[in-house]
Image (cartoon, rainbow, N blue to C red):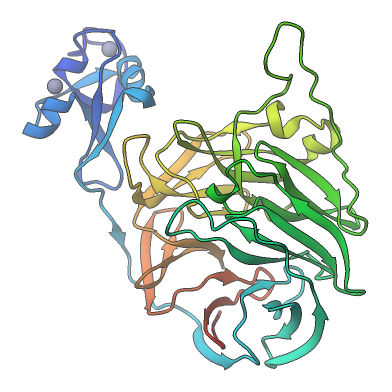
Length: 420
Ligand SMILES: [Zn+2]
Ligand SMILES: [Zn+2]
């Protein structure tokens, strides 16, 4: 092995660096320079980032020392490469006139072509294959407490359907309250309240999960607390106390984290959470639901909990692609806004396994492909290579039906369906 320009006799690292970053071991600000090959980048000091630096090979240790210090990074410079591999987009679009303009729509995950539509004061069961209403249940809408926190993210009702479709939840995203309803009886089984501490900063943290033959739901009961409850009874299953140790200001297991949108993996094992911490910093996290059934503190500080990234924003898209989590947005604390693209994480290690540039908007895993609902229309991506395969201009889906594969856009009282 030879001596590298960084002065070490070691294996070469995965990125080049400017000389100034090799000159001292002290923490120093740096920027990431896209090199025009996918999302690969080199590292240099901020002045070199302005002038086109001379880059040298550095050892693995030197590259890691610089690149892993997210707090010294001043962000990306240049543009990543978006790769294309055009091929025909399979499937067709179908426009369907609904009986009213829904406030929201949710697929019933286990039943193909079955959806729930949210009307003012009612939830309607609808079959997309026959365009037929098959039931209507009166539902009292949850109270509104605020207007949301961000101008571009107003408080708005959101509908969730349980895996079997027996239960639904109506929550108010970017607001405080919600309710779970048994659609067989119309009975409200739980009233949801996530407290008054900045609820307008995130989607209402809510997700249904299957557990053996029962249905449960995960919901925020405070800004920094999630609980699991039984959908049939509303009974909380994760009761826990947070004792304050003597001499401490904060309770044990205290989690300094505002919970956000939740996403359950298709096998029901993992739960991802798109929340934030003070400064503010967007911090996607995840943990193992099976571990949570054993350890009630798993969501706070359990051994399976992983903090995936520290970055400038949250309330971005997330989706599970099999047993990998896809998180929208490239960049760190100083990349604001984050760049269009996705990062793919392994839930067990919390390590990033891949990343590519391009996808923006809502994300869906559909037929082994990643679909992004960009403002100009849906784009289809090969998640293995990061190549864009095709697009459907003007079609901007908001939901994907996991059982029948339909992508759906709402436009007033019209549903536009893409069927595979
Ligand atoms: Zn430099
Ligand atoms: Zn070195």
